[in-house]
Image (tube, rainbow, N blue to C red; front, side, top):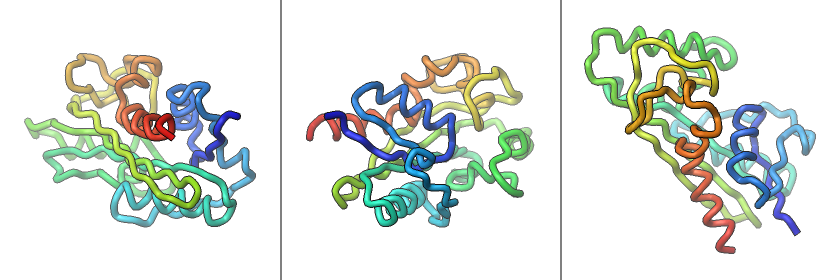
Length: 194
C-alpha cells in the first residue's frame, strides 16, 4: 500500500514541486484534500520552527501523518536576511514576490558581496514522532530579474556552478538541484529506510 502524507501547504507551486520530486513513492495530499482551510500561523523565528508549527497543527487537528516546510533566502551581506521573513519581506498582506525582489535588489545596490543561499527545513510527523530535514543551495543574487519560470526569488538567484537563474532553468532542472529537492531527498531517504 502506498504511503500517504499530508503536505501542510496551500502553495500550489510547492505542492507540484514536491509531488514531482517524490514521484510515485508517496501519495501527497494537500490541505485542500483534507478540507483544511485554516491559515496556520508561522510565528516562529526559525525556518525549522515554522515547519514544526505547521506539521504539529495538522497532526493535532487531523491525526494524519504529515510534513511541512519553510524556506528562506539568506543573503550574506544582509546578515542572513530576509531569512524566515522571505515570503513577507516587503511587508503588507500576502506573498508579493515582485515587491520582495524589488526591496532586496534595492538593499543590495552598490554591494559587491552578492552571496546568498536558499535553505529549506522540513518537519515530518509520523506516528507522533518528529523528524527534521534540511536542504541548502548556495548561489548569488544578480542585479536584475531573468527568466519567467519558478516563483519567489527565482528570477534573481543563480545557483553556484550555473549561469542561469532558477527562473531561467525551468522546473525540471531546478527540481534536481534546489534546496527543496535536497531537503525532500533527505525525507525520501528516511521514508525509504523504514
